[in-house]
Amino acid sequence: MSFDKKLNNIFEILYNTFGPQHWWPGDSPFEVAVGAILTQNTNWSNVKKAIENLKKYKLLEPYKIYKIDHKKLSELIKSSGYYTIKAKRLKSFIDFLIKEYNGKIESMNNEDTLLLRKKLLSINGIGKETADSILLYAINKPIFVIDTYTKRILSRHGILTDKDSYDYYQNLFHKSLKKDVKLFNEYHALIVKVGKTFCKSKRPLCDQCPLKGI
Image (cartoon, rainbow, N blue to C red; front, top):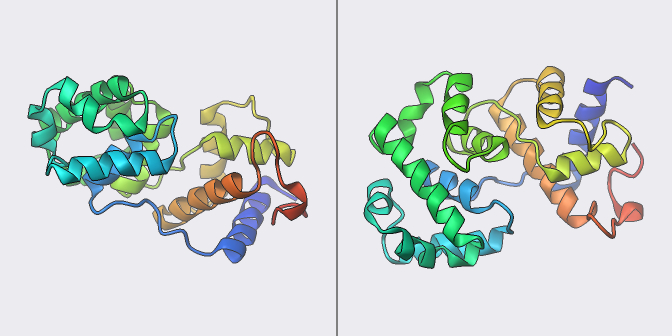
């Protein structure tokens, strides 16, 4: 079976098993971007608490986060872990957003995808996965997000190896799938779902996994 058929087969199995995932949780593109930055090296429940804290104090706005001092911001997002580092990264993103787009993330929509990706990657603390999550989920750009679950699942099924690079994985997804925001959104969300539920790092539940037959 060719690589593109394998990827499409995996998507169909996962979609038929789990259904639509309604990703990414957030009331606005800006909230989605903030969530993408805070979710690095932690689980979503911790990020949700941090975002709810920002909302509680009515600070989930670019200019308000821009004005708040680093220490106060760190305290507000403490639940997300590595909060001092993440406060710095969030501040760097806000500085970029205000300088380049007057604080309006929606203004990124008309920007060329690859150019915008390059700009995001130039921000301190923004790596490829975070940049691509912002592009896909906050700005609706057709770019596939590669994460630990993607590498783990495909390597365990002998499709790729976990040593292949982020770019190598992403290029193969882009070549093999229709370049569509909705598809990329749903596919990545389903990969995370099966990864968390069955394809665990230490004790995978292979016999119960819907992908066991591929």
